[in-house]
Image (cartoon, rainbow, N blue to C red; front, side, top):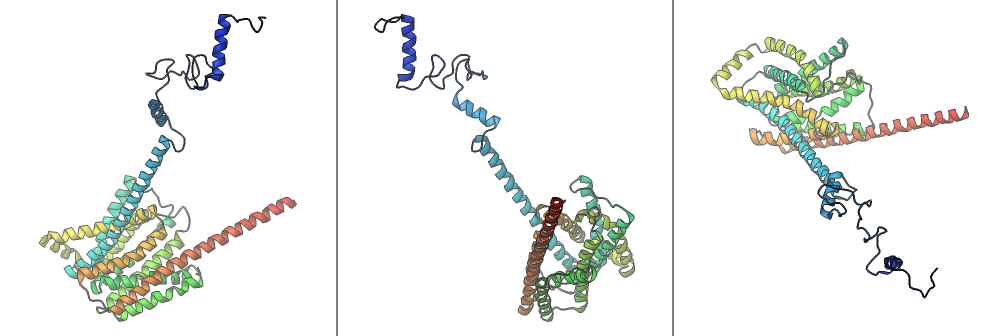
Length: 420
């Protein structure tokens, strides 16, 4: 071994000087691979993965590495994650725009069909509400079949002859509600028609109690008081009150509530439940049969009057066709709004729809209104809103009670298994 004062061989001295500088060079630490700084790959090292367009032993440029990471996916906060977040935001905004457009179409269809019914039956003088309802059902039957065939809505079928009979009963009640509403528009203004129609929750609560033996909470029954009080005030103060129109609208509101209760009673089985469009499709043949028979008996001149009006004025045919299209659009948008939001949202929108229809009809038809009548209608609307909120709280309480009972049963079962 050479002494300390003896010079080392050149090869050893060179090697040692390199190794020494690896720990003492102030410019930075060296890589464990010979001849490079930290982060600089050597030939054959683990960082020397060949990339297209990158020579062997060279480091891939940072901008290209960033672009490759973006294409391959990255961690949260990186470029691909930000891109995915932006895509999610764009999708959410597009869904919000779609939902708003569906709600707008629902409002336009509901208000438009009411105003056109009033125009045809009262202003134009086409005094055949049963025939008009039959035209609506012809269009609804044809278009609902077309929509079902297109695959826009899920295909549902009738399960049995008993299922068909239940749908037939609902169809007859549905016809009564629509015909009653159209008859009332011949004699009373749209504002009074909507005020009476707002009392549907009152009849729904009573029919649920007497038919289904379904009791509501005291809070729900209290909210029915302003509904009735408001319509009493509106009826007494209505300048264009007509008894036949009042009875027809009253019957239509009662039939609408009856259909809602019967639908919950008859179609209780999960396999028998139908969405609004499929239910409309299966109700249409029965409804058309009833309406055609009623037209032949009660409105025998309707077909001749229809042909004469179409021959004299193409505008009449255009308005009637638009009216029928809107009648189907009411059912289609009803299905789409429920799909995009919820039944509760649809109920809230329905409460606001009546108020909008009243305001629009007053501006269009210039029918006189009294301050007391509007005050009574406002009380009815507030009662309907309070009824909706009370029903929501009641359902929430029932849901929590059912969950607590289920947890209690599971706890008892667990204790029993432990003792066993």
